[in-house]
Amino acid sequence: AEFFAVRGSARWDIVLFAVGLVVLPPLLLLGVEALAGLARGRAATVAHLLFVGGLVGLLVLQALPADASTAVLLVAAAAAGAGAALLYARAHPARMLLTVLAAAPLVFVGLFLLQSPVSRLVLDDAPEPRLAEVPSRAPVVMVVLDELPTVSLMDADGEIDEARYPSFARLAGDATWYRNATTVHEWTTAAVPAILTGVRPGADDLPLYLDHPDNLFTLLGAGYRLRVLESQTHLCPPGLCDDDREPLAERVGSLLSDLSIVYGHLVLPEDLTSRLPSISSSWRDFGAPGGPVVRLQRGPSEPGGRAGDYIGRDAEVREFVEALEPGDGPALAFLHTLLPHHPWEYLPNGKVYGSDLGTQPGMVNERWVGDPELALQGQQRHLLQVGYVDLLLGRILDRLEATGQYDDALVVVVADHGVSFRPNDERRRIHAGNMAEIAFVPLLVKAPGQTSG
Image 1: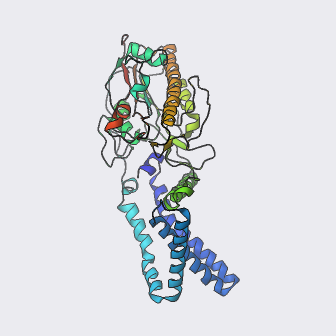
Image 2: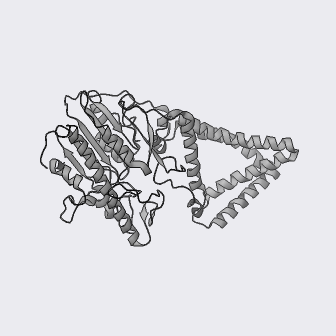
């Protein structure tokens, strides 16, 4: 369900996917059989047996242990498929069994749409926004950074490193630094909703307005102009933050493309899946030539949605900075940016020195493996990118001062979770050993009129 939720899939996207998956492949195979039959009578029978054997082979391939050798897995699956095709051709009970099972795909679709966790996205309607009345007129600027541990900002004395990160130190000079702030979850899709609602995430909660109707956007939505750039969450309700979707054909096409890659990761042996695009660093467009992309939202002052990719993450920050203009009435400017999140590709001055989303040496399935120096290299690259985040934060603060909003504004800078660089240990999955790096996150709050840290 989270896969569809983060992508912003509409209910009809999910219905079309589920029904199409059950209807279209059989129609395609039947069409091939029909064409083969027109060419030669027995060709249809041969095609039918090949399809039966191939589909059984796929089932067996997915059921076998993935860590076995590729040759053994493929031979075993081929043998099982050949045996099934022979049994189907020779044994009437085998054909009867598949005839009875013909109803199973319809049952699967029904369970998927009506009983699985995805059913809530299909059946439930989001409630009408319950807008609060807030008398304050102070501008609110909130920046949620992604994958930044507090320790990355500190010097040897436990203070914010002013030499490396002058903009963080500059904000801390005017703000309250909550040194012991922690996240409540190691994954963005649970941590950011908790930040926006003040409520601990439930086990089945999705990062949607549907599950979090009372949040920062509904709190300020009645009296504030909203300029919202969300990434991976969709908590701003329709009407307050309009999100113009891609055309249906593009959304469904992207979904099918991505799930074909997911299917390859599920079915193929491990050494073959290494040739497929990574599915662990993003939620969509795994096979896109420009890299995976993430769906972003815009507020009503800038209607429309766009795809912002990991490779051009600084563009969304520049867009956010340019939108920090005073106007009629107070405004909430909210940005969740996928920085300094992996991939680490930026130098502190913003120069891109390398971008490969799938391969950070030494990092495999969210774990540091192999030479311990590779984890150290990852940390060094991370710190370089934190330096660039500091530069972007400085541009936000400069813009607020240049437009005369800084003194009166409530400015909040926080991260959703941290990241660990302990060799031969988990990068993001939390346990007692890496708790300090993942749990503790920066939280800086400058109240309106506050001038001392």
